[in-house]
Amino acid sequence: MSPITGITRGGAVWTPAFVIDLNQTRCIGCGRCFKVCPRDVFELIDRDDLDLEMELEDANHDDFDEAPGMVMSLKDSQDCIGCQACSRVCPKKCLSHEPQSVAA
Image 1 (spheres, rainbow, N blue to C red):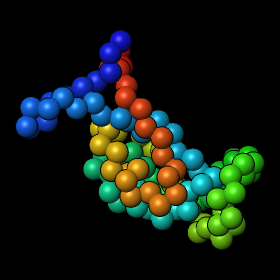
Image 2: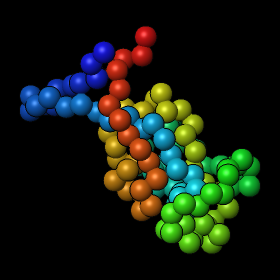
Image 3: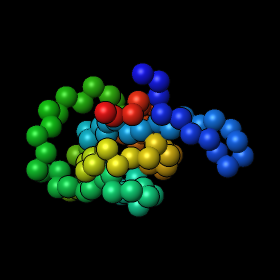
Image 4: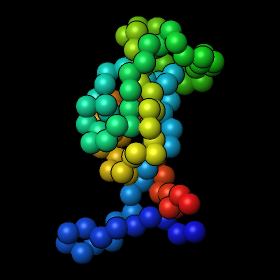
């Protein structure tokens, strides 16, 4: 199947890239993605409630132990409109996006 596409007001073809993953080991719980999202895609949850395997492969995880007690989670990724505003404001680059086909 071909990916979802749209047309901008100016007539240009646009392919949205929808959020598919959020790296919670990298997330610092700042809430920027939550604040900028025009839909109900994210929610803050208590980091202690996570069942994360703490395999910190990346040297950039030095601040994980210093992070606030909250971490972002995908509440409803099916409500994502593919604007990628969340990725543009994320200081830790926690989010992954991909074009998607229409779900049947």
